[in-house]
Length: 439
Ligand code: GLU
Ligand code: MG
Image 1 (tube, rainbow, N blue to C red):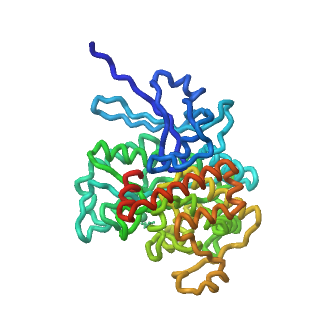
Image 2 (image 1 turned 135 degrees about the vertical axis):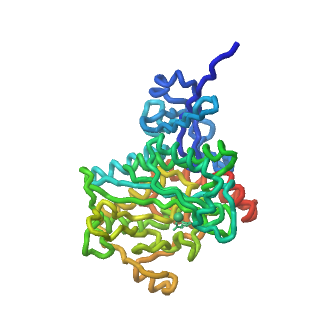
Image 3 (image 1 turned 45 degrees about the horizontal axis):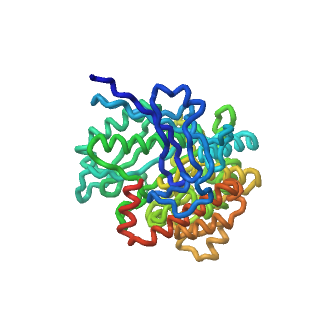
């Protein structure tokens, strides 16, 4: 008997390991599942990127619901007769429907709601991704070269079309500097949507690459010693009516006092933030001096080695600069959950506004040429040089752990310290290969 293939929908969360995990159900049950979701287990958040649970504060106990959310759909219909791939991003709740302490998507909602309520502000964001495409052609001298796109038109075309079909507007697709390295940028969107889109983009990219017989990796360092894959988080502030409020001509860097305080908040907590935004052992192989990533907690105007970079805009007549003005956080990579990354940036920025922090020093040139004392004088801290150091900085920053709350703080530190311990069994080359497969 010939039967129609049945579709499965998977409801997923993006977790501490930056992995997209969940459970599936027959598509015909979607209405019911929208209400009750699928069962989820607290200890799942402790599964690290190596697929292990070195330790867990939750044990084998407890039950949660992972509930599909409106706008969370990733739909990838394939024209080979197989059922479409359908994932829906969800929130993790208690059995009574309350957000769970370790639901990272709910944390971002809380951060954005606080920004709105306390400061009357909204955040627009866009996650810019670099990645390595296994099937790319490698030729000496092919950085940014047209030749490095050759032969992968099928993948690129399908990838861009799938993004658009999932309401993600591609902005640029380019061959990057590194071998087999590519970059995709997309249009900005409201905070929660932007983070949803970052999760979706990675999954769509992975799925399409697989369908084209290849494999992609967003890992921060695929090959040790070669330029890394960054995630640059662009953001701008608007009032509740959507009017941009970050730009003020005549001010240093064109930055309004509000935006300056927001940035100062991020810089004040930068060392703790790194534990969240660059949370893999090998993230610190990317955050090296002169790597076009970030090495100090500094703000600079159009400098690709600053943690916070004031991005360029066309200085042509008729350009609405205020709408284009945005800041880029460069100390992030794709081993983290975009929800958690953005939530922490928002909490830190909001704290800067709340405390009325003065505008940060806008550095120009390499802060490494200054002595420690000179950097301190300019308010520029060193970023952590390892994940262990970053986690210690997070643990020591009681304001930052306050944003996470005690349950998530404990789970996060335990999860990540377990990962460091496991990573210690491997040499750098082997470790990069493992992370490359995981991300
Ligand atoms: N690959 C660099 C990074 O790790 C970024 C290069 C660029 O400015 O696009 O962040
Ligand atoms: Mg780039």
